[in-house]
Image 1 (cartoon, rainbow over the protein chains, first blue to last red):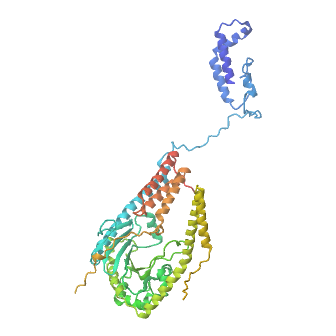
Image 2: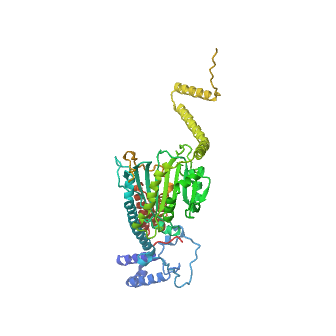
Image 3: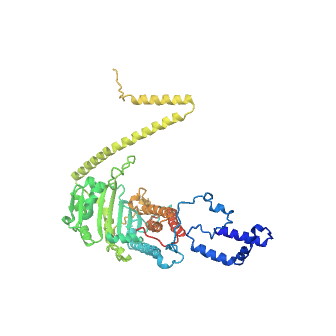
Length: 459
Length: 101
């Protein structure tokens, strides 16, 4: 409508400027002059009127003129696509009902207050990083303190204290850091043993999540001595002193305890605290180990001593059927001694000076290395132990027999499949035929019953 | 009478790191590494800022619990992935984070 009006004005302007002596349009000349003079006012008025009546679709004559023949295509509905003719213009609404949507203008509201969660996240990460640094250095200092406190006794017992296994020659003095809370020390070069592995299993002070988790499940720093007796000559026995709360579980889970130790006895029977239980294959071994000196030491350091396990048939944990690897060779039993000590305090306010508290028990463990070889069992007990070992060995073989058979069958199948694939892939027909014949012969031989050959001497 | 020294230089055996040290001893580094990757992908693809932040935390925890024998490159790449998830989330939408609940 506005366009038609503007066009009209332009035309009008052109007419007035041009010398048009056409009398047909002379009657409009005066009108046009008036209109040109007040062109601006009229245009402004019309514009205002148009904005007021924006929602109204009118066919009013304000915007149509008799001279709109040229602008017919604007009123022709067929010229417009998608125009809904059924829409009726709303009438007499007055002001248009405009809704102003409230949108979040980020640029306007970018204050720190709105980023509270981000600030908390970054603060959490900073706290975690600070805790990591502090925890790591604390664990390192505790491990070093333990090593310094026990260096003398270890060096008097072992030729090498602290070999990391990487250098060409065995070296001393290396406390290997497995993780930020697990340190190992390998000692070797002693009579009656292959070596001793000291594991310092400290609390995960470097991990804030683990520290928070420890509040729910308290624990402490643990020192574990694993003495590999190698191939020394020792009488066959399995003996363990375990915490009562874990004794039942370990009795089921550890293979040698489960196979050879038939019963558990309370520690009080042997003068030990109630918190300890004794498991032994042979009763006479208990009295040999738990003499008065050992019992006194264990009672004195009750808060530090946790467990001991001496065995000539150590194979670790019993593997469940689903985790067992049928193709893997059965584990060879080892002659081992495992001592576990804990640092008192349950991890709270543990100082480097506390790491020296395990020294008397480490000395006791080292004395046990020599004691193991000196233990002498009665003949009867030895024979019983030997029979038991034979029985356990046979049952283990039976158990694994089925698995080994299955593995062998699988291997045979794989071999046959590989042969067949070879035949299929062979392009040369002669060679293929030969391979097929060979395969067929093998199959026939396999199908034949196996007959023992007997040589009969004809005299 | 002093006891004879039990030391025997000829019986020195070298330290052999346990070959069959199964990951089940402490599975936390592996689980956290995997979680970090999953959260990073969620943060990048689904534009979830909280997932990107969780990925950063998981990679931190994985690093803190990692073993010395673990590949440092993998840990570093996991951390970079989670950091990039956070950065990309904020580049695409600079507004503050909305928690999922």
